[in-house]
Length: 168
Image (cartoon, rainbow, N blue to C red; front, side, top):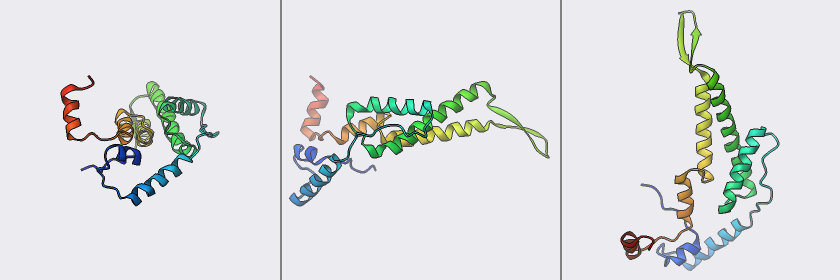
């Protein structure tokens, strides 16, 4: 069973405080949320060590995430890993267009066909990208989690009304 989604204090209070937070808990959470607001987002640039394509991917992701305003300066490192992994995934994919997926391997026993090492490398970079991209909302499921975390929950009556009438 998945854990409860983390909601802002504002969302909890708008929802009638069904989490039953005490005044002290609400105040503490509000202070924590204010501390997060202090994080700056004025230096979100790709690191110099990245390749030209990696930097392009980085900038494209930043441009697309500007709308939801979730990136701050400390996200640069994770976003750099994510962008670099996609860059290397693309390089492996392009290289595999000109090579066979299977290669001959010569050993003392004889010749046998094995998977091209680029396939494993490609899969490894895809996994890295997937892992880090979910942190930034780069998949439909990850974006849904971000939206849900910032949207108050509906009570049973509101849910029933939503099901019956939708967006009317």
